[in-house]
Length: 84
Image (cartoon, one colour):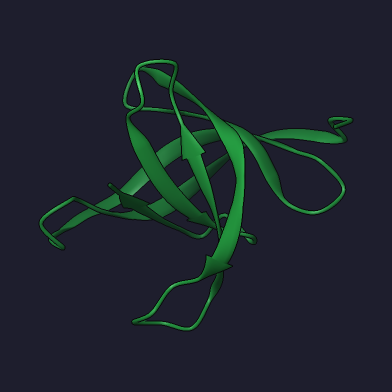
């Protein structure tokens, strides 16, 4: 996986109870296909290899996890994050 872009974005974050947390800055590194690494809420998340679509929105997403197995899903355009 080759990182092509690093940027700080403002994403709409949804918590594990499906409650909106609002617009929160997230630092994201991208590979050629989407988000590969993200820094959110003081933790570093890496792409797990799982991708799919959010059931509620139909948007394409990637699963990311920390070394301690905290997980989130992020859209390929990095506009939305669902904490898991």
